[in-house]
Image 1 (spheres, rainbow, N blue to C red):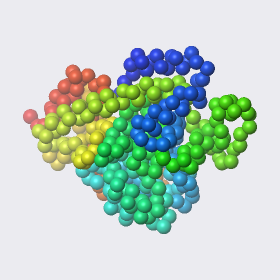
Image 2 (cartoon, rainbow, N blue to C red; image 1 turned 90 degrees about the vertical axis):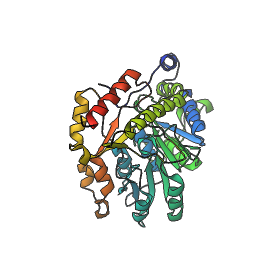
Image 3 (spheres, helix red, strand yellow; image 1 turned 60 degrees about the horizontal axis):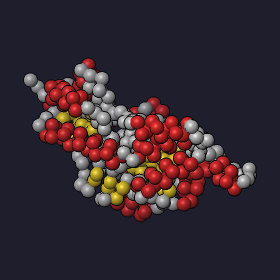
Length: 379
Ligand SMILES: *Cc1c(COP(=O)(O)O)cnc(C)c1O
């Protein structure tokens, strides 16, 4: 089966991990700070806070901006559930906004419609690797005094109007899960220019402790204080060494994903039964996913039929994502305003994610294309 996503690990990555295993620091040592500085510098932000997953990064962000019971946070209807769960962790209420039907990015008009006196923040998700319209979202958030958080778990290495993803919102969240742009096995990071947020998150990821062990060690003291409740969300030196090594290859990875996407684009110019998501102008797309929307009327079959047909032939397509509010956990918490996201509901019936990752072999890719053409066109 050709998967929809896969990590790329080379000998440099392996050696970087081995070197840490032979060193004194396995967890919060020098590699953590080096990785944080490297990512922050790469994206052009002042601070990077490494944590042990993208989900932990979202939780840190919600804690840093002070989300609490009664607060509402607007998020897109289609995203990975972790985006919404992070709001629940801090007692807040996720409010679902509908999507642009062509890009499946959050609909900025619906965001404005869903703002209430309780709204505290918007989490924009760079679905599939394409940046949201951050200039427009910033205007909306500034006007209503809201925090803007970017869930950029799909878009590390992408750009918006010649600015890097990671420097476009008050806080940006990344994941280093194996299918994402770069991997640390499991891992995540928040980037921000705000020193108060950064300090809060360094502490929150480490039980609420105000100074980490490595700094106490340098200052020759055992003393620390816990002022607020935190978690153990630390990412270790083993993973950060892998992350540093991976980050060097990020531009090449993104380039390879963009080349694959360009070839898919030309194929779908000729296939009337499916169309890829629309790419905006002034965007360098990171292509975590290559998503198509099926024309089910023209096809005369369901998405499930297409999915199973492709799987039976070894093409491991996937579906990203079930609208979050359809999960029983969320159905039980639904607010009347959340019931209606018609674009998301309609899109969910017809989306498919095709194989795309840097090491997708030429032969496998050609096989994917031939199989897609066969399955999606009548003969
Ligand atoms: C992957 C992902 C996350 C969560 O990241 P983990 O590292 O798996 O915890 C959150 N949001 C989106 C949009 C993601 O794709």
